[in-house]
Length: 263
Image (cartoon, rainbow, N blue to C red; front, side, top):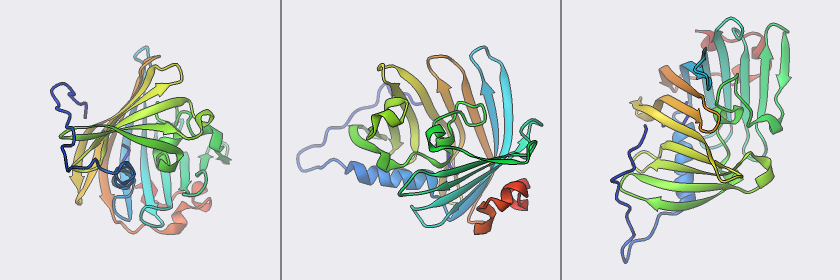
């Protein structure tokens, strides 16, 4: 249930250079632990989300929704169910994801006004999630196998890893760099570089708490650094290991949201 981050004061951090006899950590192990910490807390989970979408002119819109997550296996397949409560133009809308390991995720969007279930194409995974600065792919996370990873810096607090897509034409970015907390393996900040070499997107964890023993982001922000605007999400009533049934995450429940999603 973690979207993925605290503004960091990089100035003053001392970068450490491994001394003789010390070896740098394996970057793939860091990525595996980070993916697990960010997306696999407990066997399942639930949270209420309040989202503020602020455009470049300062105009603000809001979204309120509940999000459910269930793991089919630890570190493997997952299901996500997002039920919108407010405002009225999105009320009762449902977004569902089946996260796969060996192929693209499956995504559905239920539009109650039309009583229509729409499949979201894999090619649209990096488009706006309900008008926000988050992408559909951000809900379930980008598969680590889609990128190559390079540990470019290490200091007392963070591993700094540059990620480059294996298939360059499949995404809008050229690379992104993530700051990972060495104590928790939670990602704290991600900066995206476009194909013109410009920094254009910033994702941050603004506040974290430990909930039921799991480090958890409770406030996050994504900002458009070129055109302006940002989306801030706040998470509340977070709980893990609540025993969500597998059949909640089926097309049947897009039309008839379960109590677990509506409450």
